[in-house]
Image (cartoon, rainbow, N blue to C red; front, side):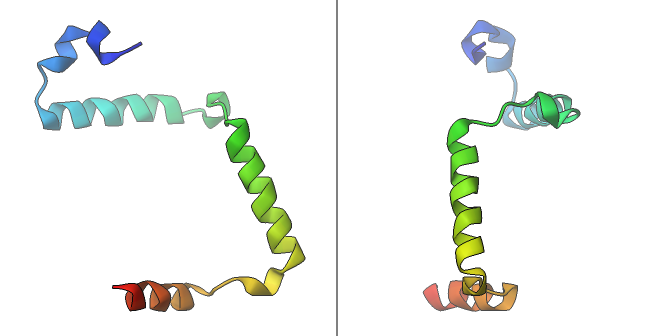
Length: 73
């Protein structure tokens, strides 16, 4: 389904569209088991888990990550 198929949505204000999107998300997220996970996401998670298992010491603490981000600004 596309927005163009529901013309009433086009007439909503931006805040009304945001509220509608929130309501739609809330209705989907009630049972997350019904939301399919793309294979590409599963593959990426598997890759990252293997990388972590091979090198568990290569992770940054939250403080280290924040410092790296601040240095880039």
